[in-house]
Amino acid sequence: MSAHRAARRRWVLRAAVVLAVAAVVHGLAIWAAPRLIMGRVLAGIGTTGGGGGSGGVFLPPMTDASQRRIVMPSPDLLYAVCPFDVARTPLRIRADPKAPGYWSIALYSASSDNFFVINDRQAGGRPVDLVLAGPSAYPTAPAVPDGATLVAAPSARGMLLMRVLVADYAAQRDQLEAARATLRCEPLR
Amino acid sequence: MSGPRTPALEPTGPHRPARRRSRRRAFATGAAVLALGIAIGLGSAWLAVRREAGIAAGPWRASLLAGSADADAWTRARVAIGGLLALNREETMYYVATHDYTGAALRSRCTYRVEGTPPPARWWSVTAYAEDFFLFDAPQRRYSVNGETARLDERGRFAFVTGPAAPAAPIVGETVPWLPTPGDRGLLLTLRVYNPEAALQAAPASLDPPRIEPVGVCR
Image (cartoon, rainbow over all chains, first blue to last red; front, side, top):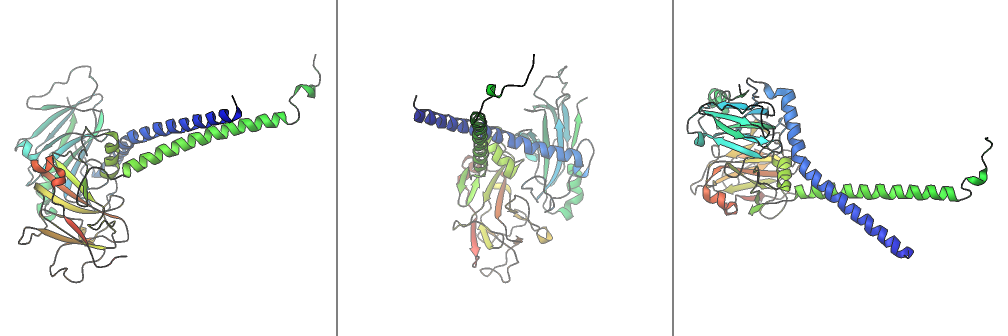
């Protein structure tokens, strides 16, 4: 083989390695980005508590410009947050919000997918009662209480986000705060 | 038996440095190949998530798969960076505008008049964000105009103004709400449409897009 052909072969090989490394890094970065961002958000909520609350629920104050944890926060919604980990035990989620307008309870996986949502119209005035089970089997099958709905989470870790529409916070404060305070996230007993 | 090593058994003259140089060159080439691959991989990933995707309605763009478990990896990454914890399309549709109707990029130091008809939905809002996807430090918490706060004219249309300062005089002879956008930053407007009607869900591009018009000269 001539020196010229050998050199050309080396350059082709290097270009192939560059492309292969680029493809792997591209795929890894795209795959990891939502998981890293969700992980950071979950870790932040777990450590700071976002205002604290009972039943594993955090009740952050009304959104303003100082909120810089989650992008594109809505200033028209009051949130309640419940980070979950259902690897060992299912989670029981209950709420009975009596808000004057729209509200919803949405569940997000560790990769940020919105895998479940229920809103006030779908609830039809009835309390929400969910049992959230993880993707792996438990030693004993979870006993779903009467009236509760079983929801399968695609990942053990994730987050619940309750949204309550705020038309006029000052005027509706008591009603809105009472509505989001009905949210409970507790291990299924 | 041991004795002094014979210099004649070691590579002599230029051979040893030449081999070292060759090894060093091979290592440097390998590192450069690896670094270039990593840089291209990360750069292309960044470009992919920053690329505007989805459908367009005037200057407004919407991702059809935001929040959905059916989203591809690129959509999921894009949403995580620019709209984490989005709801799926049946619950809420998100339209984002980064340009005015002339195609010029929105800037917070410029003044814009936004006018449109309320979208066919249970509730809607338009919120002003800086280019980092967070709210402006707006006085009196004037962050958004929504279905509750918007005033509709006799034709059933809403209008509001964004800009660094409150309009000194009514624009086009009318007084409309003002969303403060202080500083000189990139600006994006997000239209949230809660519980959209089935027709809009099925055809998101059918939205009657609010018009974003620059007011005066802004350089």
